[in-house]
Amino acid sequence: MTGSLPTRSRRPVAILFVLSVVALLTTTALTVIAISSADEPEPCCAGPVAEAGALPSPTRPADATRKEGLPHCLIGSWRMADEVLMTKFYTDVDALPLTTSGRYYELRADGTGVERNANINMVGNYQGNELRLVVNGWREFTWTATGTTLTFVAVTKAKLTWSFYDQRGLLETQPEGPRALNELNNYTCSGASVTETDAGGSRSVWSRTTDYGAYG
Image (cartoon, rainbow, N blue to C red):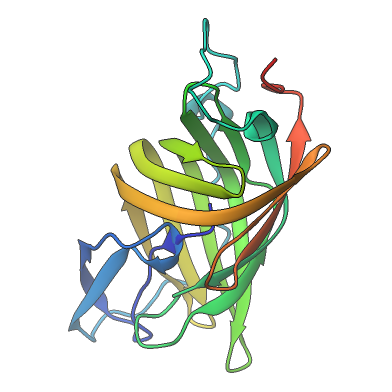
């Protein structure tokens, strides 16, 4: 998914954040409101690693039936091999490119799917300082597609955290729960790979894995 990621303020503050749904990964999913400037961020350190037992198993659901019109080439299991995600890291700064790889997806024949993340680092730069957004956990979602357009409809279940780092260290960690998405992206299939893009400039290249396989 190349839509809404959570965002945060540039100031090292204690915060109160409110869920604000727009799209998944490139647009704002969490609005951050500063309420105090007294707290300093913790020293920078690696984000918490999700334990394998906490992530959904990449097993094929029994008796899956392909929903009418879903393209065969999207159904299966995928590793995100190369991604550039235009991300609102700070609420008061335009979207910035973060690069990453290693997220795992299953797009199932019945229009459901799952994303799995184990200490995935999304890395960028702002005014010469490194930015990192570390994601751990999983989310289940629903999706649909035509011949050229892939739509992520909603997150139905989630146990996911986003940890924000800049030059000051760990700024905060935010959880994610179920929410509507309606994120519409373009895609092209080419053999064992898929390229996904959106209007905001994000781009992901997927590589097929054997965890779930292609719908037959």
